Length: 538
Image (tube, rainbow, N blue to C red; front, side):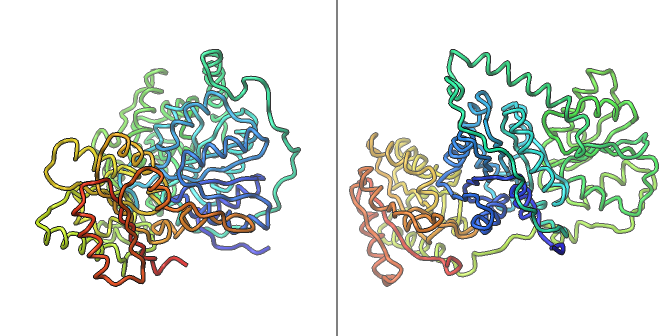
């Protein structure tokens, strides 16, 4: 079949199909959502099961169960979602896996669609799990296939890190081949195999360290890691930053450079790095976001007695915060390479041309007018409530918020403000997806401890900022049907919320304002559900 121009997200999906995955799970969060969506579209054609979960911990738990049952599984989450899944991950690393289990984890340098700028590469050494990062969509497809084989052969979780700029990068690739035929793995029911306890924790940890040593030896010859050029001026670049580097260097004289391209982020290929350091009299490290590779390379150099100057973020030669654009790289190369003269100059003034594309949904969003009306009614009652929000579409009305942390945090923050003795009403503003994600636990705690914040759930019908994925309120899509609804109102009532109002999309604004006044007048644990379906959700 002829090649198609596809982006990095879809290339990873094609690699997963060719690897023979049987299950893909995830929670909406870009980058990573695009790969899940591509696999959901092709599930019937290739026979795998795709299922959105209400949070990332559940997504990883389900994938672990599928792996233990003998089926290859992929988990699609983003950086902050990896934080949610970490509790399971830090046990799964000890037990290991049966069938291949790969986590596709999206970082967001520049925080284009995130509440923080988190560099999640540090989780590789923390969890002692292999982590890879592709430089191009074509390499990403290969890395996914390799990751599943590696996971299954060494019985370990494998993490693939991508960034938003990689996910939108396009390349001409041939459509996926049929999934490879391989013997089915029967479920593994060896006694204590999947139980991590005092009885086996130390032996499991010892086995994990043996696996890491095997990986380090293997990664020295990994085709995704390589040296290019004779030196003596060295440049190290990992993952998609390598692609940016090659474009920034285009047309310049590179005869004195030795470039170390890394596709393996953990464990690092120690012998290859040692060879690189012995070749170079000075090294520039390019990476996003933190000086992870910069610090790690210094450790390798110290151990082998090769200590050329290492330039990077810690020395001020490379910007630390934000995405590393090509103009940033050329700025660093100007100071590093004598007479650096590329064919094309990337400039700071044109930085938006390098910014990764992200579809905007915010035009016409009703959330701003809803919270504006809420604030106005509070003022009319002589109140100035503290508003704590969760991430998501609520950000369009961020000027009305007093605080915003992470998914599921607003109820706890509102309760904490109340317990701190603030004189005003405390309010938690939650999206419908966030309510299911992690807000329910906080709601139970608020009820059990006598906290009385006012909750406002803004229900637009799905997780819009990541593509409009549905929530259990209307039932989740299953392969042949829609699952039974699990309603916000019913859950809140079961958790002990004493007063609940629902404002429907067809209700006039006057009724919504009247509900806000009534809710602000109560001092009980209360909930207002405002249903305003987004026009972008089908």
